[in-house]
Image (cartoon, rainbow, N blue to C red; front, side):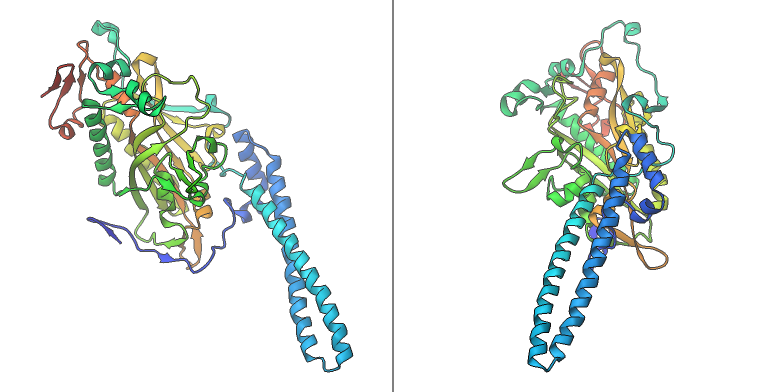
Length: 450
């Protein structure tokens, strides 16, 4: 398949269900349950859940064996009935066959019930974390490093304004009319605001393309099995907009649509990872965030984002993860933003992530760092759910690793406006963004400055 000047492999279609069950490696779970229990402890989750899954798995297998043995017995007995010539004996055999059929039907129902119980249990198990991930909750995440030095506005002789005050002064952000038209946490970007966002997204996409990502404009509505397959239907399900009439979900990130791109397919990774760069509108309900970041555009219901997504061999996943983080830091450098890198603690990971790094940019008026990007190594958690495989060296199919990472989104405007503001209310444009704004070097209340 070709997209413009970019090539994507044309994977072979699956000829049937994959021999991958649930969201975790069951063989690994059966052989090393203590590893999964340790992961649960680090996440602050239920250790007993692992025992529940093992019990459900054992019950499922026993029930399935009983059903298959009874069905084989029924099939053999059917031949005996058909071969019987004596009418009276045959009548007795027919009656016995009916009893056997009822038993098979009952065992089939038991097997189905056991399968459902197992599925319900295993679906609750989050991804197995990678060794070295910090244990604990949000407060236990570990700062890896800081880059850049925050400006000393006091030394420059003025008090910094927050991004909304700057944006309103430049007629770049309009939250009042956004609320009038759509409700709270919606906004308009106008003039410089709109151009800045488009410039930022174009720089982000060009950065991704240069790194080998194929650009993809993704759907923003997906089926339930795609949303569930990516692991977003767990504890954060209340963040998702659902269109009940159409049985479709609005995505909170193009990661969802990109993950589903190769659903039920066998992909060719012989030439290395498949890398996709998605651009889309994103939607989040922000449930549970009442009273948080209500001012401006830090926490909104709709935003734009460029997202990296990769499919790779499991053994190459950690290197790919570091590569994505390097690209995120490259973008932050382009935008001339002070930032820090955080290794997210296990208890603050989503269900699908085995490890996640965040980058947080300095926000002067909040005197703190705020998240701009995250990148997650989801190992085989998503591919097992979505039945995405590749062929190993032995020719057998195996689950692939999936990874994702933000390149840029609307929230970046907050950090750009605040870090590059000037005393006269203008904002300097970072050099890397200037070509995307027709060479504009700054934007003031009077308009662009070349």
